[in-house]
Image (cartoon, rainbow, N blue to C red; front, side):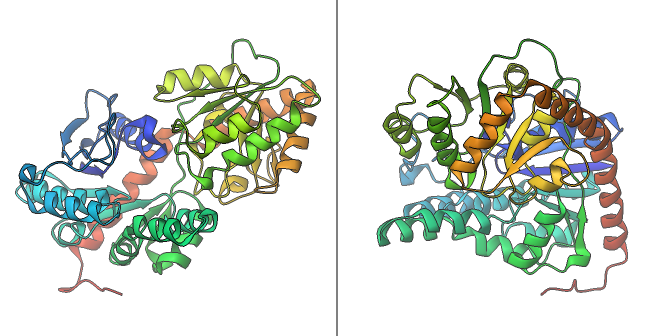
Length: 419
């Protein structure tokens, strides 16, 4: 099958969505499908050679080293540029919408080259035209409305609350577009339930396909550093619960040596950076950003514990990578995490109350003190990853959804149903 895979941000180190594009496209190529990735910035840097990449450049407003600096107006060359520029000036996150307009323009004259279009959660208005022209599928990892709720709760003062509300104004667009997508891929049962509740999607249109993990790359082996805890937070946002993990680490260090290796983009002088300083943890927290998958895999192999303190996750790919690495997991009982680790099925993780630093510190301390328990959890996690989370099975299940989308498109009524 000839697949156009769309993703407004696709570099793996910016989060799980980038990993999804890289690994799914490779697995689809392994299965004999022809895949072309259409990506905004930052672009993927490790696509399989069999996968083509079409770059759809944005205005680069969020690019380092000077993010949030709009270009001069005379650089605007298209409707998408104008939309991105104007929306950014009002404090909105414009990439999903502007990317969808660029994707529609890029594909408009190439319709006969693809059998199906697969959107990776941009859900912009520009896709409404595409889904009328070609079979269309969208993956929704989780509704971003959940991020908005957590950030609004953490915001202090009306100015900050207004800023958060404006930034997340794109969520209403995503909900409207999602209700018009013929078939949606959800990555977990809980994420599907939340998408139905928040976006009002007809559940009959959703197919659950869990994410996968490269079990050859993420594998046990090497030396575990005593007291080392690893956490991976794709963004420095309240939703990821890093503040609670730092509080727990401070409590742990009262009684034992412990260190945190934090993979995240932490803003110097930002809230997380200030919390590290105020808790006296500067020498005990090492921050990594921009790591390759190989470097993350190596880091996980050195840890005694992987901690996932998130207040919500639609799936949590880092959790599965830890399971595959044989690294014991301590995680919040939040979102899809219990489903991912198999609570009640496989004993491969310790789950705690989201946002409870006391309980998190106690769970981490107990596991650091129990080598036998760590070994048992690690072995069970590895077994679960091998059994449930291979990218080959993800690619096959995804291709089945593509085939269904093609059948639906070929037999669609003259006007597609919209809600």
